[in-house]
Length: 336
Ligand SMILES: [Zn+2]
Ligand SMILES: [Zn+2]
Image (cartoon, rainbow, N blue to C red):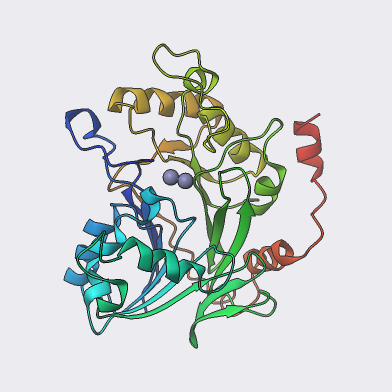
């Protein structure tokens, strides 16, 4: 079995796709990120970036079993799904999870997105086997030797299981799920479509604590957010962050690397490059996501760690506990 843990970016833009000469460097497709853990493929969101990803999965014969997680169901996170090639493959098995008031909500929304009036093919006409379910924040998504299943806690799970915890954020209209994916002691946090709070989003900081990679919304320039950029009204309250907000969460959660995500569709490559430079001055290990960016987190294959409960899985257990964690000494000092 492959030991690789890789994160690859297929769509990094927010709101709507932006093809054209001004977005070639970072790319114009909307949100979609692939996490490959050994033989397992996990996809975060189905913006238009999932379309080339789907073709690649079919071409490389990796479309057999796929786990797709929706952060929320706004257009820019779902619009690529009707064009996702594996969904049409009879031998493909898709496990699809996301937010929703009842377990059926997600399925109903995806069906509506492909109603007769809006798309030529319905969800049920896509030939793959699909398990579509809205999940609760308290549930844990597990992919282990028993397959993909839901658990009520991460207690006792082995390091070999892919463990996915959920944090529900209210810092976006309608709410959004933040996911933490852990495998063999490494973890990736996906926090798109979220707006920072004064003094940082403390719950998100706890949730992202010590993650190896934090993918964080950084849609706006500071001046744009504040309404001080000519031609751009203030976006305060829209549910997206500035670079500074993203860097504050990265620093407070002591994450390994920050990836700026969900670039504003009206921003050119030059503007995003400028934001990346700002981010680096605030949090050194920062990068602006671009289509094709790949981060390799392949863990140390040390046999003594494998099969045991890693610190990461202990972290997953703590994240599931109802009482908030106390701040560390370092955090207390940082936020005095
Ligand atoms: Zn979005
Ligand atoms: Zn949104």
